[in-house]
Amino acid sequence: AAILKVRSRVAIELVGEIERRKLTQGRAATLLSVTQPRISDLMRGRLDLFSLDTLIEMASRVGFKVDIKLTKRRAA
Image (cartoon, one colour):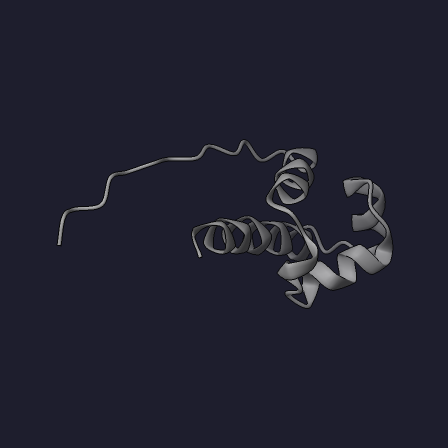
């Protein structure tokens, strides 16, 4: 569940950046060094098709710096 949460956060930021820049899927694919169908999958929220590594790599290509913060849960 934790990995899915992180993947979804990175994906949301990527989709937002693509939309903010008003990129077509083809232009986004070129920028992110992936195929247009991969961008389509991303835009449709198909996170099961993306590893966290892939999403972080794509985010770095559009200028994001990714930091992971770990915090300890409180005992219940």
